[in-house]
Image (cartoon, rainbow, N blue to C red; front, side, top):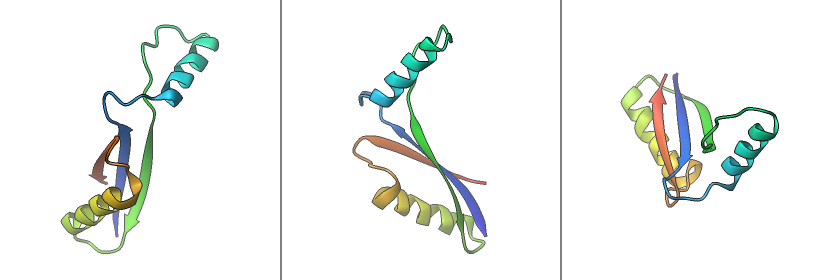
Length: 80
């Protein structure tokens, strides 16, 4: 079994209202000095098999089709 972590983040230049709200919340809680916050998503996957390259390719296809909106998001795949 192959374990992998997919990290999905907004592309630079894409507005991030959730990140802005988090930054405001941190300030309201007294955390000073936070210049910016960008939110994202993390997916931990287990894929059957033992071929890491094949698993990475399959997971990239999953990202392209479902896990990430590649118009506004970037993703990275890390085999664990």
